[in-house]
Image 1 (cartoon, rainbow, N blue to C red):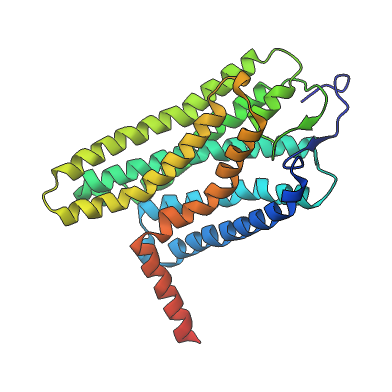
Image 2 (cartoon, rainbow, N blue to C red):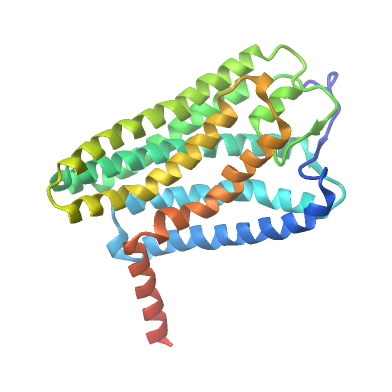
Length: 311
């Protein structure tokens, strides 16, 4: 926290898209619709995976965690972004700004770890199908989920707290929400330690899980190639393709934002990247990873059928 004799700022100006005032009403409508779709999509996934016994599998257990994470992430960012698009006073309080930074960093790290865990789950399902229910039993899944959330907290929020330094004016944030790489440019003193901690944190929460994903899919591809039946190959690949799309999108944007030197910062480009992984990606996850899945569509049709019969 900055010392009182170094800053008296109680709030920051969050510029967002104020340099494009004519676009702000259009962006408000777009982001509002995206946020609404995100809420319905992820709540729908949680409800379906909880209510339908056929979806009580490890894959959908972790998918519920991912959907809950997406709900929290986008809710921490989008409502304030929407208010700044329609109000002329584009400010954010000091405490809310740092709370937003903590939440997005923690949940971003948690999503990286969860995606790696889901890749491991697909590896066990494809490469060890006969032992899948034994290896990935419910107790194991609960422990893996608990460890994933704990690791994400320790590798993101704790280093950020320890590395906070006093901020200097002007208290203007040329971004769409508060996140660590942007606040790094407002620190008064030398930021070498902060950059090093961010790089280490990025390696721990981005690169290591990404390596686990690559190793898992390396084994999966080898197992699929060895299958004799074309139908079996297609089925095995279909269980992994959606996850691969999500992984590529999320890890790609995350690495671009968090694993680069401070000198390469570009406000306009970084706004677009941040909007993509904080606003668009939580909406796409249910569509890409779930609603393209036959099991989810069948579960949805059964739920609709039960409601129609009840009426």
